[in-house]
Length: 133
Image 1 (cartoon, rainbow, N blue to C red):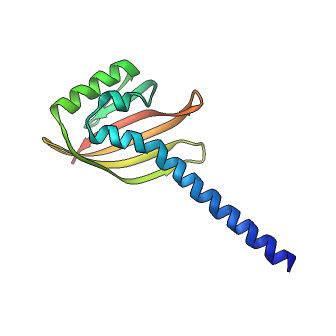
Image 2: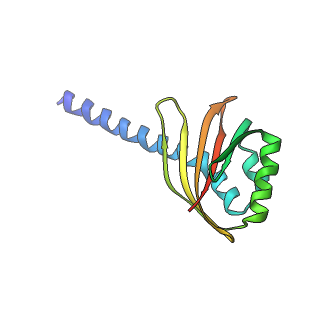
Image 3: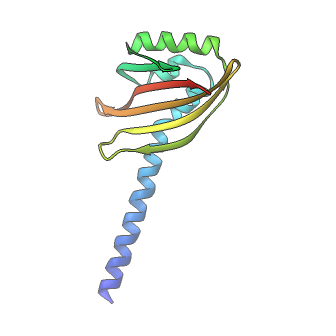
């Protein structure tokens, strides 16, 4: 009797931990999703690490957070968003989270890859890559 009670308790604990982990991962991307949807480079930049790798159709470069904000602002100005949704999210054992999304802009549709790493006690964007479909 005691064994089945402890097994049940352990199972419930593991399920709760999985739910809390999934919600924490979703929270890390929620604000980023909203900022991209509205075309707010400033909103996205609030989640940048000290340096960010930005890619557009295979051309990737590393920028300081300030430079990356201006590059993203230029992209949004030329490709204003009409919609943006994440289609997949995941994480590695090392705490690196990623998401793949679909960005629909006035000049086309892009597949977006975003990688978030733990830094400075927070989850910060390390990479954003836009690839035209």
